[in-house]
Structure formats: structure tokens, C-alpha cells
Amino acid sequence: MRKNLAKVLASASFVVALILIVILLVTAFGGIDFEEFESKLVRGLLISISILYILLAGITITLLFIQGEALHEIVIKNGKGESMRVSVGVVKKEVKKACHMIEGVKFKKIALLGDGFGVTLKLNIKVEDKDLDEVEIATRCYIEDCMAKTFGYHFNAIDINIMQLVPKYKANTEEINQEVEKQLEIKREAEEKALAEKREAEAREAAMREELRSSDGSAPEETAVAEEEPYAPEYPETPETETPAEETEEEHSEEHTEEKASDETTED
Image (cartoon, rainbow, N blue to C red; front, top):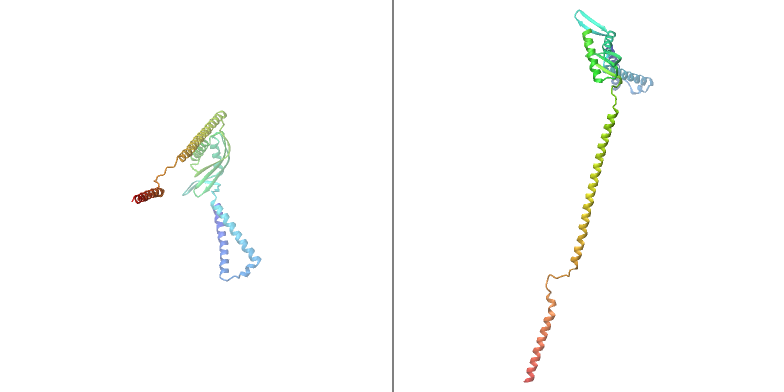
């Protein structure tokens, strides 16, 4: 049914699209003047055709991508000269009987969907105080065994949807509280350790700074002591300081020579 409807809608959308393409081509080649599109009637028709095409295309795409269509019967045997079909109601009844054997599981809805690959069974269930993995495996095993032994048929897929859940899990308050205390203790120890390491690092840094300050303070004193020592010249005195003494000696020798000459003259 769904496939036939999709085919009809696809054909209709193709016809509408073809009409729009013809109008566009005729207008492009001058068959229709642009002034004629100023009429409200023409505009209304074009808008209506466009909306119709969009609706048809959307519905067609939706039908193509739907997982499957609801079935009314299942073909059990289909061969040359023989055919056997089972109604969906009979299949659902047998599936419910098989599933009622599973403890803690109640079925809300059963649906059979067909596609190009086979028939898919969809189950909406309610689970009460039961492990989910156990429920899933048990449901598949019971249904497959029932269908194989009753109809000789196998579903292409079995989809299980859990609509309600009453969990089996019950919290052990004492164990959880102990675990919480343990985690908190580990966290506190980590924080205290980090704080101690931080303080130790600060103490080392302060000690290094104090050592640097003491070493910087001793250097200026040594410099001051060195500056107080008298300055000793590295080079001898220049000849300029010795020149007056030499001149004085020369003057005395000249005077002594003159006196001696004068004495000799007197004696003569």
C-alpha cells in the first residue's frame, strides 16, 4: 500500500514539475510576455502549482524513507501451485503467548512492518526488576523458537523498545557512603600534599633570596676598604720636577768658578 501510494505521488509530482518547466521555457523563448505575469490570477496559479509540487515531493520522500509499512498478513509459503498466508492477528497472539513466559516483562504493543528485505517485528515492552541484557536475549530466543516451531518462519529483525522500566538496581547505602569517605580522604591527602610542597618551595625560595642579599651586602664593604688605601703612582716623576734642582747646581758651580777667577786676578 505504501509503495503504491509513493508511486502515485511521485508520478503526480513529476507532472506538476513538467508543467512548471514548460511555462518557464515558453516564457524564456518569448511565447509569454512578462507583462502577463503581473496579473493576480496568473501569479496565484503559479504559486498554487509550486506549493502543490513541494507538498507532493515532501510526502513522496517521506514515504520512501519510512522504515516499513504495516502488514495485514504474512506469507508463510509461496511456491508454484501453493501459497499459505497467516494474518497479523494470529502472529501477534502467538508472539504474546511466547513472551508471557518471560518473567518481569509486560508487552504494551506489537507491530509487524514489511520492507524490501522481509518482515520486522517491533515490540514495546515494560521491564520490572529484571536485567536488560537478560530480557533482550530471552525475548529474542522465545519469539524465534515460537515462530520456527509454529509457522516455520523467521523474522528479518526484532526491534525491542523499552517503554517503562522498574529497575532491579537497589543502592547499598553503607557501601556507597564508605566509598564516598574513601574518595574524600584521598582528595584531602592530595590537597595537603600539594600545599606542603608549595610551602616547601616558598621556603627554599626565601632562603635563596636571603643568601643573595647577604652576598650582595658584603661586596660594597670590601670596595670601601680598598678605596681608603693610599694611592701609589705606577710611573716615576717626570723630568720637569727635577729641572729646578739641576739649574740650581749649575748656578752654584758658575758662581764658584767666578769667585775663583776673581781671587786669581787679585793675587796677580
